[in-house]
Structures are given as C-alpha cells and as structure tokens.
Image 1 (tube, rainbow, N blue to C red):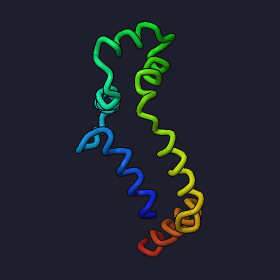
Image 2 (image 1 turned 180 degrees about the horizontal axis):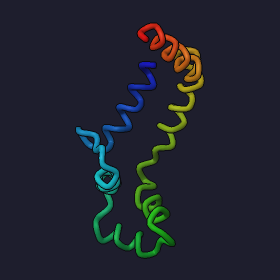
Image 3 (image 1 turned 60 degrees about the vertical axis):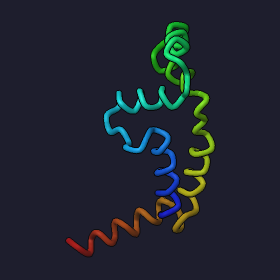
Length: 97
C-alpha cells in the first residue's frame, strides 16, 4: 500500500527528520511543531482539566484531520482495501513457513 505508506511518512515528517520512537519525545516534538511559545503552552496546560485535554488544545493547530481522513480513505480503497491487503500479505507469509 504505497500511497498509505507515503501519507504516514508525511505525517511523521511533521515531527522532525528522525521520527521519535519514545512517546515523551513525540509529545515534545508535537508541542514544538505546534509553534506555540513555552509561556503559551504553560497557560494552556494550566487551564486544562487534565493533561490529555491540554495536549489536544496545545496541538490543535497542527490539524491532522486531513491526514486522518485521507488515511482512512486509502485504508478502504488502496490495493482492494486494508483488509484484503493484510490478508494477501498474511497468505504470502504462509508460503515461507
């Protein structure tokens, strides 16, 4: 599913040249990508009911909605859809066992 893979690569690039594998590093990268100043981020987190809502607010301007929508469209259509592609892949693995 090459188009789906390219889309995921685009999303990962928003977090820097090297995709952070550690969750805390990813969160830091997202906060940096938001372009908000540290003082603004501090205000957002202080006003939030909890960390996760604060994080969602702090990174809302990144708008991953279009990426998410496109990913699900590709999951339904590319290479017969994700379910068919996954089944084909799994069947191919059985040939090597």
